[in-house]
Length: 257
Image (tube, rainbow, N blue to C red; front, side, top):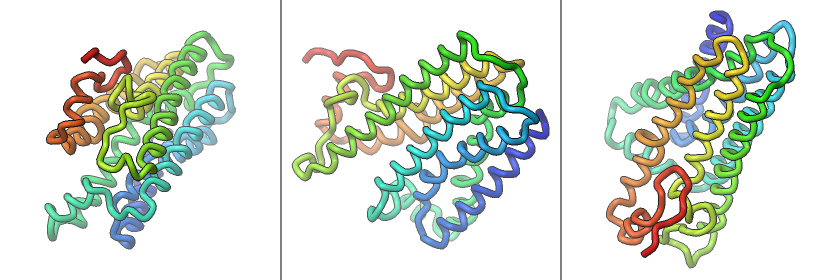
């Protein structure tokens, strides 16, 4: 197990260092968001081929992680095309001043790499195992993962379509999945990692992977997702009314006026 962790940690360190120098050359730290999904795909591929044999569970996890990681990377790349650096990173570029380069490397890219390693726990544990055959936990985990993928992919699609309409400029989306949760994409991402954790419960010491969904859910709720985005819209009257009626994270029926 230690060798799997070591190789994964080294690969992530090299990967995020390359991401940092690419972002430095292009003067755009938003690239960190594009590299995020791809990094998990790399960990999945690396640890999949490190094992002496392949099981149906390992193949399942590999496919799920690659589908999610590639879709997310492509979506973020298309979303960011021609927009310049995201407002979060632009603010840090201004606030950090002459310390921007070292702090970017440590607090953006390497910190994300550290989180990536911890969140990859279900992937690493499954690929290190040799238990064969799928069981009920695998099917339950797959169902949870598919639910999450639906919310993230469809939520992103609906948001992108909404923003492409010039008449919606400055407005808040409150239709489709966004009628039931203010952040269907973030809920979906959290849900997918809970699904992978449930799959990992099928292997030895799989319970240890609970650190993965706990960490990503905390990050999405309190750090880089819900909290940061809603802070941006706190003075928007339309958003405050939307927030009053709509669940912040877990989908639920909107409150009546």
